[in-house]
Amino acid sequence: MSAWLVALVALQGAVDQGILVIREDTVEVAREAFRLATVQVGEHLEHWKLATSVRYDRGRPVVVLGPALEVGPDSQPVSLEYDVIDSRGPERILGQQGRARFVVRTLGRRIERAREFALTGPMVVLDDSVFALYRFAAWYARPAPRILAAIYPRSGRRETLTVQDLGLAATTLNRNPATLRHVTVTGGAAGDVHLWLASDGRLMKIEMPARHLSVERLPAA
Image 1 (cartoon, rainbow, N blue to C red):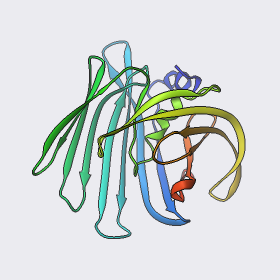
Image 2 (image 1 turned 135 degrees about the vertical axis):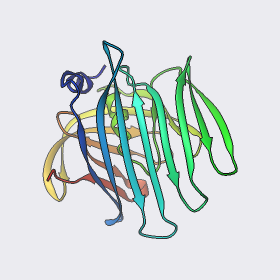
Image 3 (image 1 turned 45 degrees about the vertical axis):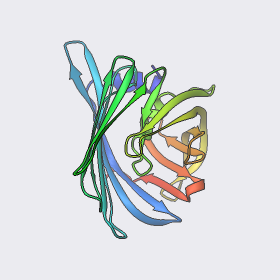
């Protein structure tokens, strides 16, 4: 368990919530609201649940994405409930951890399909258009590169990623100078992904140069 996760667990039920501004080529295309909380499972076990929602409505058709992901104390995904609304009609995606696997079921108007992903090592659930989920990838980061599997439930693909903690570095946040912890995620279709985190593990900024995309957390009101 990473030092960030230990610190968060020690807060006993603390909630982190905020809004991420998503920009392409400096133009705002959407905002993502998220909430992270602990979930009591049994008498002595806590899980983490991240619920997030993002609406892309700058163009047509409008797309609304709303995943809720639960992870265990080992940071592995336990369950997923994901509502997707787009021009092809609504979908509901359900994920559940089984014995050495994570099963993803997609339920739509005309389709129902299932796929199993082997849990052979560290795994995260990601999405090309939902960014708060990268927080769980950062939990795995260490100074030495670490391999993990990423599954993308909407597309059904699996990628092998490398995550690494590069330590504190200077950057900007909402146009202001900042010193944040720099974590890189490499090896996937998104290209090099740069995560910037506060000292307590809060996700503050994401940069995806290959997609000309940046995501920044709004200051707390």
